[in-house]
Image 1 (cartoon, rainbow, N blue to C red):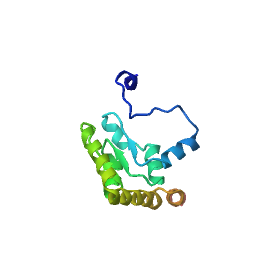
Image 2 (image 1 turned 180 degrees about the vertical axis):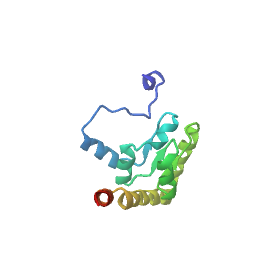
Image 3 (image 1 turned 45 degrees about the vertical axis):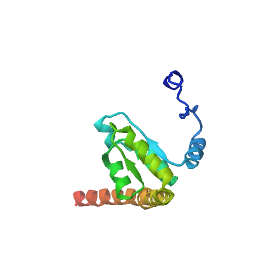
Image 4 (image 1 turned 120 degrees about the vertical axis):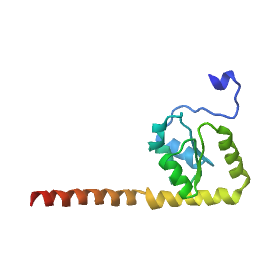
Amino acid sequence: EKKENEKIENVFILDPMPKQDVVNLIKSSDIGIMSVINYKILEDNSANKFFDFLAAGLPIMINYKGWQGKELNDYNCGYSCEYTNPSDMALKIIELKNNEELFNEMKINSKKLANQKYSLEVSLENLYEVFNKVSIKKERKMR
């Protein structure tokens, strides 16, 4: 309604689609943007789109801080902006549009972060370690 009432033309609202179509849409995008309402608890979220954007090798923009903001900053693969300052996010989008070298660097870094910390192989290794620790603790208790 807001889009129609305010005649906003640069926002597209799509109908629900199958997961594979969503994946293809993400892969064809230039930047992944996640925007949430200003609730402190959301800084701890683990939104699937964050990982989808990393896997697709997209620079990521979020409007909150928390652990995801730290990852974006530490790995130089996107920006964590203030919820109260949407103009800052807009300026950073323009910066990426105008700085092809930075844009490409963030794409590479995003993919690298996905592979180094969040790939299926890494996740399975982490899960194995958890099970192994639990098993060892259980054995010690039984003695």
